[in-house]
Image (cartoon, rainbow, N blue to C red; front, top):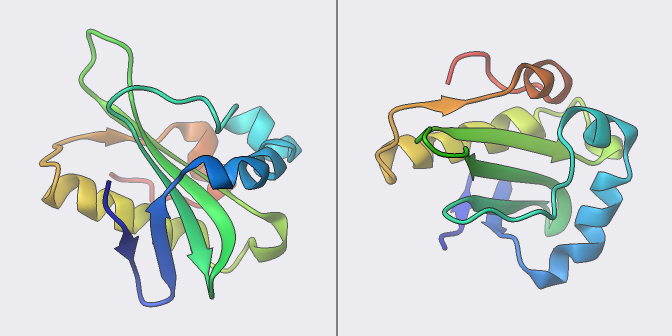
Length: 124
C-alpha cells in the first residue's frame, strides 16, 4: 500500500494502530448515519488515515462495490474539531487523483450522502 500526500496532509495506509481513532469517527452521529462502519474491510479496497501535522484527523476509503459492478466508491469521515477546513475535499481529491492516475480507474462513485455531509467534490 502506498502513502500519499498533499501540501498539508499525509494519507497513510490504515492499520491496526488506527482502531481507536476509527472507533471515535464511527461514534459520530453523522458518520454512522451517512457512511456506516469505517472499520469494515473489503478485499481490493484501499483505506487511508489522514494526518494533519502528524495528528489523525480523517479517514478516506476507496471501496470496491459488490459484483457484478467493477466500480469503486469513495467515502471520507473527518473529526468534528477540524470540519470546515477543507480536509475532506483535499484528502478525497488526492485519493481520486491516485485512483485515476495509478490504478487506472475510469469511474469512482461518491454516494450522495457523503457528498453533502463530507464536502466531497460532486464530479468524480
